[in-house]
Image 1 (cartoon, rainbow, N blue to C red):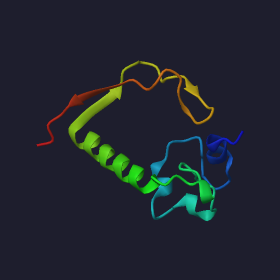
Image 2 (tube, rainbow, N blue to C red):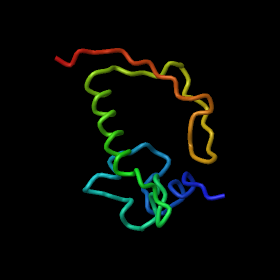
Image 3 (tube, one colour):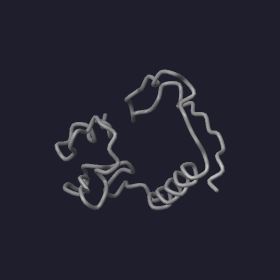
Length: 104
């Protein structure tokens, strides 16, 4: 079975793949551009997700809104246990508390 997680974590493309580092996708480093299929969150080739661009715009908009208007923390004291197949995700979901913070 193909594993997106294994591709992203074992690929020699990424520096320190086990660390959360959003800057690796920034224009200065852009590590995922060195190989066509080194980063495939929406699949690739002829079976690539047709809603990729829309999904990325929606996720970016949601992230900006949450960052600007809310304070958020994990609802549990411990980091959740992760499952790796078919993709990495928390076993019992990711419970987060959002509290509204007025940005003005």
